[in-house]
Length: 541
Image (cartoon, rainbow, N blue to C red; front, side, top):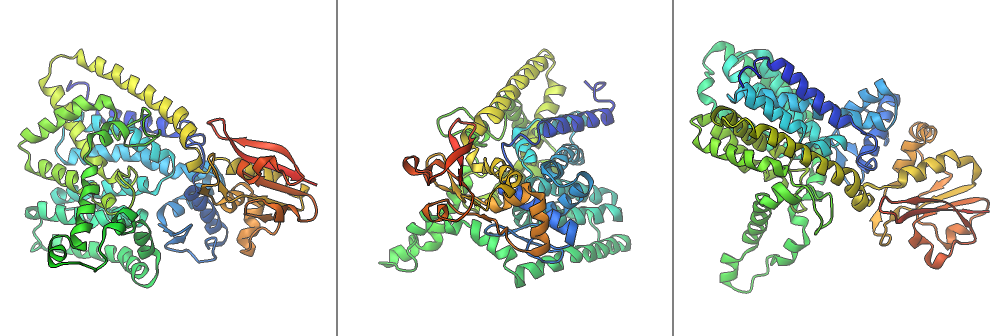
């Protein structure tokens, strides 16, 4: 086994290529549609590239006003680079997260090595992450949390390296990585300060501030930190960019909690002491936090690719369970206190940011937790390679792994689009492309901003999709800062059908109750992967 891993560089390249191939395979097709966040990022990046301003006319903003909140800037500016290289389009929007997700698998190997895990264990950890559906899905979806996780892992690895090597450039790169992680996604704003404090305490014996060289390095790095921290503080104090996001996702907005609170109206002293609002909030949070340790979430239903009652996928593959169990045992019996302390910290702190927000067991906000599972898997494989001589178990593991990946591909590419295409605003791409192509054929176009197979239950952002898939209109929108005068983004109804001229009414079947097409005729239909009609395109002369 030692000879197999005697050339780690070859294996690192192999892991990177595996990650690249998987994350870029049918990148445009899966997930089933660009999300509204991806479309918004693409539009703002294009606007920055053309005018140095976002869609609202703000010059090089540090937070991008979006639908209901403000978006962090890192992914937008990465997409600016991507669009400059590849041009405006879906691939450019998805490229940064897919590439960074692939790079994370490599950086994770170096983090594991810095924790004194052997090359064979570290390389297996990178390989495991490259094949992890939890990470693959969000890498293919252009999520900001993927970018933030990369910088978080990079910053952690570099800081641990600095404790032993004391090189200025390593510390500066660590500070930059941690800072970009904070700027990239909301969860890291809570987590990064915690992990930095933990590492400084854990490795405090390796820091001798009385040594002039070390003191100078720390002072220079603090100056670099201020470059990132000062504008962030300005956003937090003088703008709603930070506070609004926190308020929108806060656990305090959950109706189940609000209904249980007394709102200061206590009926007796016992209630005031033992059943007060502070206790109720804590109990509610504690329940959400503990739910993240549900093994069903880990191995069965964590990703929610299908509705309740259907087979699904957990954060980890089922084939990971034996090695994961063995890894837990290896961690318990390990004599490496720093490794055990780091893993225990991640076990406890990993789900903290997600637990303070709305929604139960949120896999995206829990991405921060990945290093814990990777450490355990790496230790399990490392101990297996050292202690177990039954090498015939390895081919069996690979066969089961392939079976799990085939199962994942079916769930992800067939079942997930069938059940949840509406959640990804499926259909607006097709509608927007049609409207753009035939814009000159109509005097007015109405595109519904509500949709759903069971009724108009979902609110969409059709104007963003129309701008994204109509480059000419986007250019005009950027230059003039005005909406498209020829298109209205509201449900077609009797009043809209009374408009003069040739009309295109784009709505869901629910907008045409009892087949009333307002005197028009259906010329196109957009159909969900489930086979249910999504949008009817009705032409009225």
